[in-house]
Length: 239
Image (tube, rainbow, N blue to C red):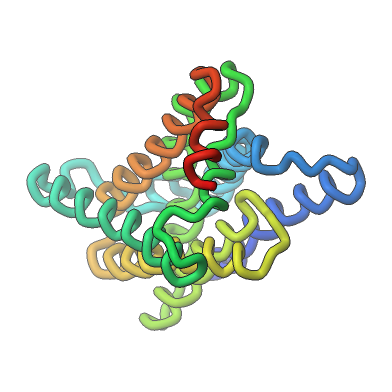
């Protein structure tokens, strides 16, 4: 596979997540999608990382090489400021999307993302979800997308689009407003990620801030999973 053509892989995660939820809902007749999304995400992340590592090896490089990781590339002080900025944009995008789509920064649908799972899986999420998501998503959309597309505008627009679009299916609820909400929530951050990576070719601040945002989600899921009645109280307050 020519390394300049790796961007053909960008829709991969959208297709995989969508196919899983259609299979689960239509074939198996199970609709408890919200409580399974984080576990599925970890599985798909691990599969994505292994696929990226295999693709990188075919190009005679490592996964770190695919991401253009270089030891000592980022100064600590600069990295901290970037991480804080990226995290703020990520949270701000979610709040803005809530206001646009539902008239509130924390719509009821957002609670579905932290629905409880069995405690064992909740603990696994905390350990694996942040790290695997950063490597899988940034490896795919930045390493295979922004880092490989030659046109400077397409190198931002196309990866950022699929980067945000995948979240419409994590988890998937076939409701137009919900899907627009999820897309808008992540688009500002994915655009900024791609612009920064295109200019600096430095994945470290992006991956750390990405992991922090997912860690917050994983900790929230752990809380609703191990604290009796926590999720029900949140839903009652939201209602």
